[in-house]
Image 1 (cartoon, protein in one colour):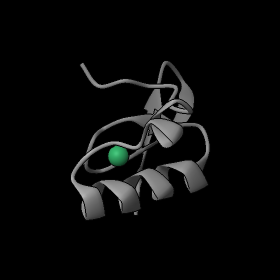
Image 2: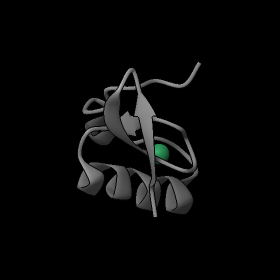
Image 3: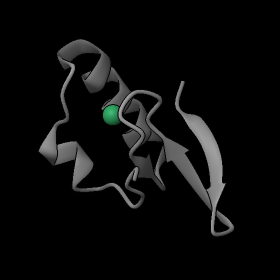
Image 4: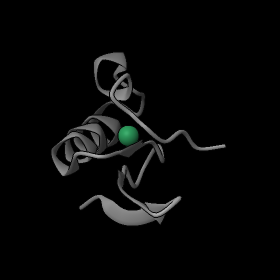
Length: 54
Ligand SMILES: [Zn+2]
């Protein structure tokens, strides 16, 4: 399950693997599923990210 975090008081769902954050839990889950399977990021998914790990 993606982790729910608060960043700048906005609810963000973070992919537990790559750390990208989404405002949509569904997206975060897709990202996490992709990441664990492919060990890389899917640009189609990460373009929807609203939070980027440092
Ligand atoms: Zn991911």
